[in-house]
Length: 117
Image 1: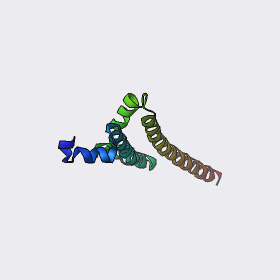
Image 2: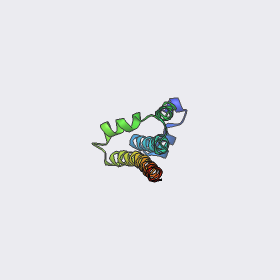
Image 3: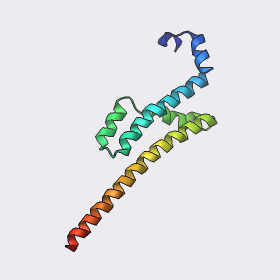
Image 4: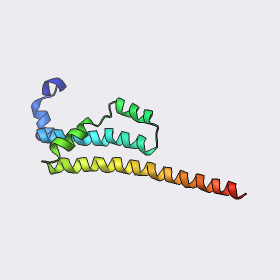
């Protein structure tokens, strides 16, 4: 990785401490950018093709899934981060459900009002 990135090994260890520190930084970045991007488009109730575009634009969830399966069971800090990612996604889908419920109630009220007239 040092060769690929063109950075000095000492700089990398000074910044991240060790490989685990680098992994956690990458996981946090993945959650803050990729998972958050997916959550944002999901919370707006975007159509499936918009969600697919976000995933295709490099915002896939591969690192999150690997972290959940491979590292979270044995690393409490990774488990905390993956739980945070799931909360972000849960909040996004809850927002979408609340919007759908509100729209449904509004449509029902309008339909009831139209029938009453």
